[in-house]
Image 1 (tube, one colour):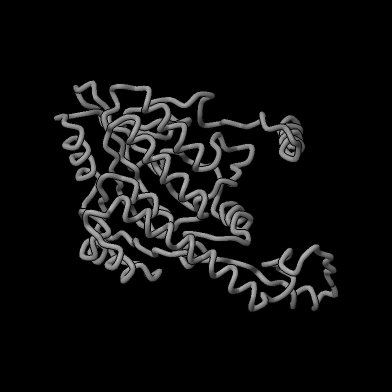
Image 2 (cartoon, one colour):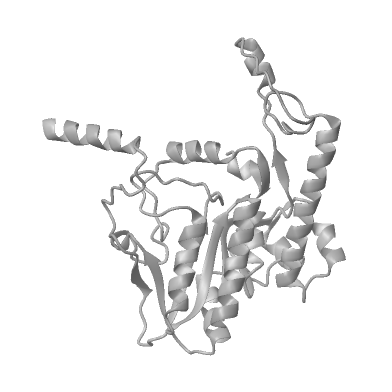
Length: 323
């Protein structure tokens, strides 16, 4: 018992240190490994990559996490797939309400870059939620399949600027600001937005919104015109059937549909289904939780989300995030 207490104390001290090299890895390995989720006599492979949760470049998994933010996870897997000639296609499995504008855009462009340099198909498979930034990312794929119960859409931008002025007044805190120009503290949490600031941020939201529309048209241009897209891109979410009718997805189906579409697009008859993971002992089949598990419990996840959801601009379905 004494040894356990000492070990716990050491872990707590190290968790507050600045060293980026320390981590505990009870379930996994030091190197990302390839695991076979569905076997086949064929040598060819189809890779699954999960994109789930809040899309952010600032996610910190803590000392118990082996992997970093979603950008590094996806990037490392696409890089490894590029160097393996037996990987003939990729299935991007999405279960996310979206997230930061920049994180969503980087994922979109990394998928496009992978397709360009490899010439291999990438198929999007939407799970429970693939909204806003999740749909933005799916638009980079060659074919989008939604589960029958998927919620998607929410095409748009939301800007969040919390205001704690009244709270601070109640507890006797006053913030003094000295600035070089009238707009230097635009979006401050310590006061209301001025009309000029609201106009400024609305212009920025409109610019990011146009970027979203252009990204969707880049992937869906053969199915949708800009006029059609603007009519349905008012921020609302859609069921899978509604999304199919509005040409936001190509098909309603399950994993097997995504697998068959990948084979057909790659021009092969069969392939193993694989994943790259640091947690091979927990990855036994395509439905074994997530392929990049996190040791965080629900409360810790909400705490990280609260830290990540700072003032700024998001491709995000906010109600799902705050449940």
